[in-house]
Length: 124
Image (tube, rainbow, N blue to C red):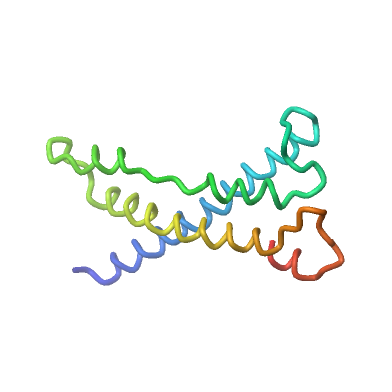
């Protein structure tokens, strides 16, 4: 086992899982929030973005079970590096999504955010 190759895999997997899940969470959450502000979506709080970010964190974890089962087929001769990157990312992105969900839920106040609270901007 090549140690430098293993370290590069871990770095790439961590980067894909963390950055991809965080980007997806904020993209989905803010799209939902601004869609609600424009009146395109109902039943989402138009004043508090935390509710939409909670939804974004919940929906951003992608489970590529079908992709991994196809890639694992020996007839396709898929690159093992690609398979290990997708597998590792799928394991870690669930953990990142759970952390984001719990963080947003901890700061969610249904009656509206208190933006003077220093914990909210530092949590984001």
